[in-house]
Length: 273
Ligand code: ADP
Ligand code: MG
Image 1 (spheres, rainbow, N blue to C red):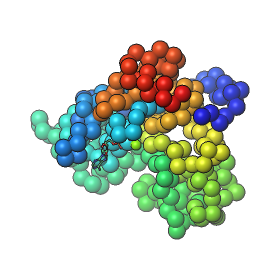
Image 2 (cartoon, protein in one colour):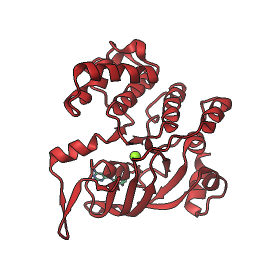
Image 3 (cartoon, helix red, strand yellow):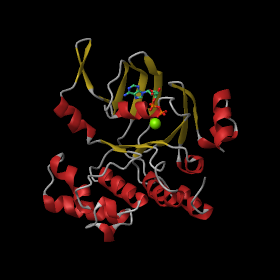
Image 4 (cartoon, rainbow, N blue to C red):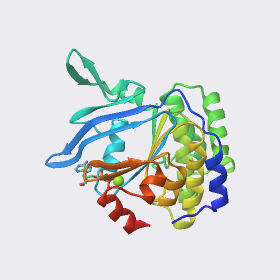
């Protein structure tokens, strides 16, 4: 489904894109199983700084697991993931890989934001405090600096008048916009979105996609798992189609959507378009 008027989308896509120096995500031959369940079976991807990658594919194909490996919410069984040349979750000593200490994992994770389907705001904190919290606890910013940054971002997502509200007083779309502001407050080079609009009532999807669309032109690298095909077609630089733990097709949206090469991509697009 498509919720944004076409003329609005056209304007955004014609804006020149900022190409930042960092946010280069390289995934090399990554394998991951849960017990006997093989979830990632040798995934390789190279997402350039500032690129927006839309990840599509049927339920159970490994999309969420892949995103979670990129900020080391899941460890990997084999392969390698780097962001700007730095390994995610591990370090090499001699010819062996060691998992990083929790503290270093948390430190590096501030560079990789994640936005979840269920928003995951702190229910007991007001909107402003939700956006300030990790700035102070993880980045050691002063309260004044964190507050200024939080206000700037709440304004950017159109919620400057909601800073004293609690999450339960907001609509799902507003909560997700707060969650996006909270993520951006840490100045991540990469933001991972896992079906950010799937929990929303249809009439609230558009306002969240508009915020993500706006970010796409700001030079943050984004990996977006989504079922919003119109959004993927208009905003993504590259579309990645996953099936059974593998990337079966990747390319510019106009190619993947108009001439999918793989039978499984054709079948999937046929079922959702
Ligand atoms: P998608 O996001 O594409 O729907 P997921 O990455 O969530 O796919 O899941 C891929 C497969 O991995 C599914 O079969 C799922 O049941 C399994 N899986 C995911 N997380 C876990 C886990 N923590 N423990 C066991 N199995 C899991
Ligand atoms: Mg998923």
